[in-house]
Amino acid sequence: MLHKIAPEADLDGAVYIGIAKPKGSPVRQLFQPGLVPGTLLIWLTFFMSLLVFYLLSSWLPTVISSAGMTLKEASLMAMMLQLGGTAGALLIGALMDRINPHTVLGSFYVLAALFIALIGSSTASPWLLSAAVFGAGFCLAGSQVGVNALAAGYYPTASRATGVAWANAVGRSGSVLGSMFGGAILASGLGLPVAFAIVGIPVIVAGLSMFLKGRLAPQPTHHTAPEVSGGIDTAKPAFQH
Image 1 (tube, rainbow, N blue to C red):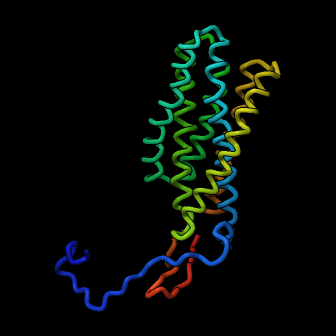
Image 2: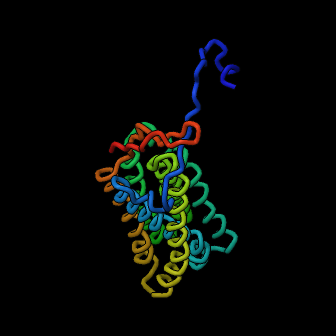
Image 3: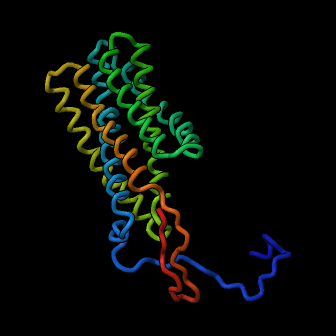
């Protein structure tokens, strides 16, 4: 196969090197020295981000229809959340390639909180409400796609699947609580402006978590991965932060 790619290459004596599976519990590898702060902050971000995203996905049609729109109009309006997320993922991903990804994600999460607060204050104006929902999806759902990529790049190759899977599992627990949290807020009688301002708080926490991770646990450079030659572990993992 290598000769087909580079027929002129001298492959005499070539040795195949692969990635060794880490010893012990795969989850324990996420808490090895140097990875603990990043793991905890990634989990916190996933939890808060998915909590609010699923809260909005579950309750936006009900909230908007209660403001006087038909259920069809409310559903179409809520669809702007998903459309915004698709557009946001493209732009945020491009920015993460050019700027510090933690700064990009932290900034967009904070901006998402502002759009979420605006939703509660703009139900009287369909155009303003549509823009607020689109902006919330753009910043929140787009950032969630970005933090998935950031988590994948944070862990060494042998632990990458475990790291991303556990981050999503923690996030899914937040999504379950999000639907319950939304119902409790709407039943509290606080009014939509106050309710949506409260909903924006967890998103601010997610943004602060990304800013903090950028300072305490930036993406590591994996200079050396565990290597396998002939089934024998021949190298130790090394991480530089």
